[in-house]
Amino acid sequence: MLGRAVMMSKGVTAHRLSKNVTFYMNELAPPVSQYQTKVSKDHKPLMLMLPWLGSRPQALGKYCEIYFRTGYDVLVVESEVQEFLWPRWGLEHGKRLLELLQSEPFVSRPLIVHAFSIGGYTFAQLLVHVSQDTNKYQALMQRIKGQIYDSLVVGSVETMATGLAKTVFPRAETLVKQISLLYFNMFRRQTVDYFNTSINAFWDSPITAPALFFFCENDTLSDPRAIEELIDHWRKRGIDLTAKNWEDSTHAGHLKRHQEEYLTTLEMFLHSLHFSPLKAKM
Image 1 (tube, helix red, strand yellow):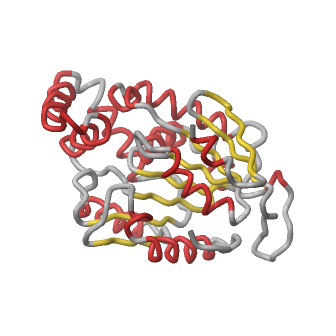
Image 2 (cartoon, rainbow, N blue to C red; image 1 turned 180 degrees about the vertical axis):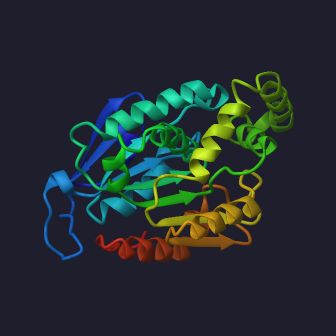
């Protein structure tokens, strides 16, 4: 479904690499480097997009379109709820993603990460593996030129349970939240302990590329104070960081609610990475 929606863009072809991984090859515009010269396909910037749970093709396609207009290829890696409920599977998912990024045709390409909501959890699972052997993954770490986090799910286990209930079972939110909390308590070693490991890997991430955070004050799935604490910690570590916070917005829906501000902030961030600026606004 996602491929069908995004394929509406002329010059973009979709390649389904696996059940949850789709590579969108873009011939719409030639990529440019910081010196405004054409670069080879092997070194063309690749956008790694990690969507929120239950993302609709049409909604996610709007974000893909932003990057298509700049000449990026886009690699969409979706997550499933069981990878969150049983984090060991999430770790395996992160490992597969890590191996994919180190294989052809992606192994030499500069990367920008754009993770939404639980997509940040998927990236954190990848970071667990990277943190365990930074020498092995040094080249990959250096290839990541920018990281964008939209509505990152950060906070307590209760926040995670709330997020699960709202995104997967919204009609039975209260019941699912209570069941989730009971589940996490009963299987603490298999769930919460794994969550803490991935949180620590993200908190002290070996990736020090410039970062952009989008968040808001009224998001029950993302604690804004926890986000600010993370931002402050990263800045103290020397990471070049930009943050855009709204008083009132929607989880993983900031583009729709605040389109002009979102696109302007994103454009300035991408420009700071010395890649091509956005050529058109949605």
